Amino acid sequence: MIPWRGGCPHREASLAWLLPRWRRAGHEPILAEAPPGPWSKAAAVADGLRHTGADVLVIADADVWTGGIPAAVDAVRSGWPWGIPHGDVHRLDQDATAAVLAGAPLGGGLVQPAYRGFEGGGITVLPRQVYEQVPLDPRYRGWGQEDESHALALRTLAGPPWRGDAPLWHLWHPPQARDSRRWGSLASRALYRRYRHAAGHPNRTRALLAEMEV
Image (tube, rainbow, N blue to C red):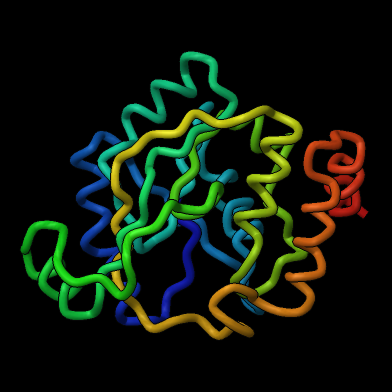
């Protein structure tokens, strides 16, 4: 399931490269379309859920790839509550991305040194039942903190994830509008702090999730 909104030629080129790769790996990708208005990953995933009855979900950003998907799916099917298929994130620069899209192997120049990926970011594998109980928060609008908050809620209510060590390759695109590289917006930062405060406390986390239904 790929949360998606068209309009950026760089992202569309990356998606065109990714779709056949997903199919060769044995997965039929579903474009989960975000509704009009400010970007909402939660709303996009909600759209995707209406188009699949799968019992295991692979929620993947439209600009990333890793070879660790099979191991993560196997881990979740064997009983892990959720899985992260990758270890370090390798953010390709614009020239390296252009080369990959033209047929070169994954690799080349990076916009920054490789780093350990945030839990919840890039690609997450989890049972549908777990996602329905612990969904992404639609109060996050734009980009920033929605993935980290989701991971905190999953750890608190579902348990620690299985994690692989395959590299995650991130294809270049112009950065999204946000307050800074770290923070999406003041509202997102404030909501994330509430998730941090609730982390490790199931009742607090459930209360936060219950607010989404009001």
